[in-house]
View (tube, one colour):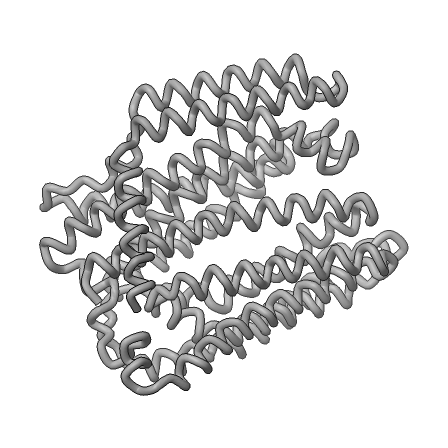
Length: 454
């Protein structure tokens, strides 16, 4: 696989991942808006905060270190031993799910069973779903290393959509099940996700040997992404890809942030009525929209950093992250006491800002001796910045006069103002960011053509 083709696949992987995250958030938002019409906000809150935090924390502690170690540095490794190592995430996940489950049930405050029944069962099933997902970790890492873009898109899209359908069905037919609904849907989601990866590789390994070697070149791992960053030509191509992905992440995150400030109250009003839109909800959502911008940038910068780091650099970075985690806990405590729930999001923003700064410093040093400056992707044209500023101002004024106590006609007018500003901003981006548009057309188009030829 040539460097141009590999980097095109990498661009597709990053772009599809970004779009999938936006799509999944929209699906989740719509699903929760539907569920709030049938179930209490206490049950939905426990699922979205307590149980989701249990699941995500278990997953993070069990697999994050393995992913960083297996997807960074040189690809000249024994992949048989690497896959065996990745299976250790399963017993580690069992340990963390049991320990954190005990913390959730014994140390944290347990909700009133009359308001939120079946909380203990929910904790057990969400912990189980984390372990089920870890069963697919070796397959996920192998697919990620070989940039199987279609597999990632199909597996994650199918699992999220089927989970949403099952949740909606159970809410309509057996709403009295409460937490059982979300717990079963979560286990179903992780099961479908793992089965997609397992089924794909089972079929792939059943192909003739020549086809399998072309699709999964395990014996020729030097053809993969980290090793192509060493020649001068490939460093130039990698810099172009990094610059374009940074620009794409910045534009996506900035769009969400600018329009999120003016439409948070309306979104929450549609989502849950005055119960959510009249309190601190809009402020929380506006702050979170800023966090999304930082998440988007960090996703790209940290991905490149771990791909280009040596093993020794990854080890040093992990120690830095350990110290950063401690400071994050302290800052979260202080900011939460100072400004409530918003403080926790601000602490996350600070944490993400530090991680971005570290990655940017690494990228700057990595390209210091070369003529390439991929960090230019974080610079927007003055015209486009003006368009974002103007859109933010117009939609802010529109919110003040049209949202959300003036009736549905005023709300529709507010949406129309936002749609016009969004169209104008995207049009300005299309006209000013010609380099990004050219990259998306050439690289992503070439990758699709290569897929068809194979």
